[in-house]
Each structure stands twice: as structure tokens, then as C-alpha cells.
Amino acid sequence: MTGAVPGARVGPADVPVPGRWVPDPLLDGHETRTLPAWRPAAGGPAWRAVAVGGAAPVLTLVRPLDQPADPLGVVVHLHGYNDYYFETHLAEAVRAAGWAFLAVDARRAGRSLRPGDVPHYQGDLREQASDLGRAVAAARSAWPGVPVAVHAHSTGGLVAALWAHAHRVRGGADAVVLNSPFLAVERSWVTPLQDQALRPLARTSPLRVVSSGPSHYAGRMRERWQFDTDLKRPDGVPVRAGWLAAVRAGQRRVAAGLEIAVPVLVARSARSGADVAAGDHPDTVDTVLDVATIAALGPGLGPDVRALVVDGGAHDLALSHDAPRAAYLAGVTHFLGDVVRERRHG
Image (tube, rainbow, N blue to C red):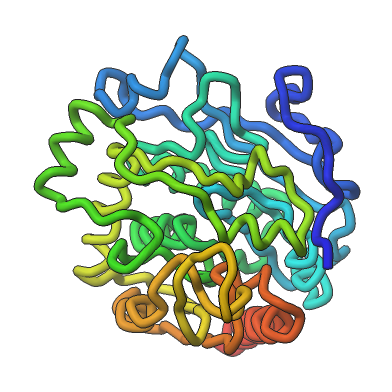
């Protein structure tokens, strides 16, 4: 099954005028809007390392042209590491449930990747969190008065959880869906590095590669799904010290417990397995993260955390084989329906 119409690479000639909605060069029936991204205070080593030539980071909003006329709510989607929005079937499932859909390609990722950028790098998770916040604000402006649910995958799920906790009093979402969130580094795709060694390395050499290798998972996904392999790379994206230090800081905060004030759906595969080129489990398990760790940490995200366990699910549950993918999308849309019902009767 294919989930996208392949298009040309995003290059300098394709960069749209900031702030205007223009046809998406990657997906038919979609349009994009590029916005300037928040920049942390200049001077830190992590920021200097990625501000080559003073390039200003951007974020890109992506939306289908076909949206419900009077939506029950709006879903804002945030991708993971080595990823971008191309899963049109996710938007279609959301629309069939009566919800509008808006995706964000965060800075240095997907449609927001610019010449000179270090792909997917962020030296502080607040960078990507601010991109998510801009997308949520855009959703509320476009569809005022309806609930906003954030749907986030993997590293995006970690960012979304921290963002929802930080905005638990004002400016957050009305619900959060975490698709295989990257809540811990242990037994994950990232080669572990002791924090005591990582922190000074991140300060002095934030772009030092600390883990690298091909993504067999992305390579296998390419057999069933159409996507731009310059934006989701089967050869992988190197893990750099500054990025990993930022992720570890966020994961330590999750381990201490969060207080997300809205309903949270934590979705995961039923099992984990090794990320190998071929094997006995062709994407019927999570080959990227340890699902037991997700199960253990999920309840600590807030007072209303619900679990969705997908038997036969891949790491990105929305890219699973037909039956588990259908089960995942049904679970997400049921959760969205509960959000609407609880909001009306709350």
C-alpha cells in the first residue's frame, strides 16, 4: 500500500514565500505554509554549531485541501527523527472521524530542511516544542472553538509530552496521542552513552557523531510506502552529541513524572525486536524502541493516561501492516470521539 505521491526534492527553488499557503511539492491535494522558527539566544555552542552562515530556521505547516466543513476538532501531527509528514492515510482517517488535520515539519526536518542545515539536529528540545506550539496556535486560529489534539510519533512524542506538561495551565492541547514515544534511550536504536561523558561532549563538540548506522526499519518501510528518501533516509541520520544530550535531559524529566492535564493516549506495539535487514518479524514488532519501557513510563505522564497496545504493530503504528494499522487508527479515532464526548458532558 502506498501512502503518498512521490515528488521532487525540496530545494532552494522550491522554498515558498514565508507565511503564504502554496501547493505542496511533495503531496498532491496538500498545501504548505512556511513560518520562521523561534531561535534560542545566540552564543551557546549547540546553537553556533548549526547556525552556519546565520541561516534562520523555519517550520512548515502542511494541510490537506479536503477538510471537514464543520470539524469536531483538529489533529496536529508532529513527526519523529529521520522523518517528515507523508502519511496521507492518517489525515484521511482523521477526516473520516470528522476532524480537521494539520501537520508540522519541524526545523531542519522534511520540508523545513535548508541548505547547510544539520538534519534533525536540535540542541534543546524546546526548539521543536516551539514549532509544535506554533502549529497548535495556527490550528486554533484556523478552527476556533473546537478541541485540538496533538498526535506525535517517537522523538516527536517525547517533545509533545514535555510541551503538554509545560503548557498544562495555558496554551496547550485538549488531548495528546503518543505513537510509540521515545521516552527512554535504554534498549533503543541509539547507542547508549553515559550522561557523565555526554554532557561535556555536548558542550564542547555538539555535532560529534556518537551513534550512526543504517535504518533497516526505514528501508523496510520503503518496500510498502512511498516517501522521499532524502527526507526519511534508509541509510540513517547520525546521532550527534548535542541532540542526544537534549533528548536525555528530556527523558530524565519524563522519568521524574509529568503532570499533563489533558487525556493522553499512549500507543505502542505489543512486542519489540531487533532492527535487522531481514528476519522472522517483518515489521510486526517495534524494532526501534523497547515497548516495555514505554508501558512502564506511560502512566507517569499525567492523571489521565490511557493505553493502546497494537498486536503486530510496527514502530510507527500508522505505517504498520493493514490489520494492525487499522486497529491503531480505530483506537485513535475512538479516543478522539471520547475527547469530544467528555468535553460536551464535562
